[in-house]
Length: 141
Image (cartoon, rainbow, N blue to C red):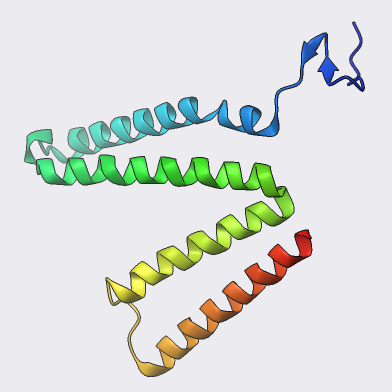
């Protein structure tokens, strides 16, 4: 067998899948692994502390499942963006945008950053992050 990629897009006499298909192959196993690890960690917590799983409010379980689903959708979107833009540009933009969304929740909803000087520093960092993202995007051509 020929172990080299040929000009026709074949390797080991099989068609080469796209970057997107290659990246998306791992999401199911990753999601199942995260679910099992969380389930086992919660079971260990209940066993160690003596707490009952029935003491967990059902609304919090639904919120956890919802946030996990949002995380999964965001992760798929990040992989698709990185596959389309390339690693150097896509990964940087995904990380910058995730940082901006997370820190915006921290400031606008949870009010974790207070004081005029701290807010000025936060907004200055946001401007630098967005400016850097724009420059990185423009470098792609």
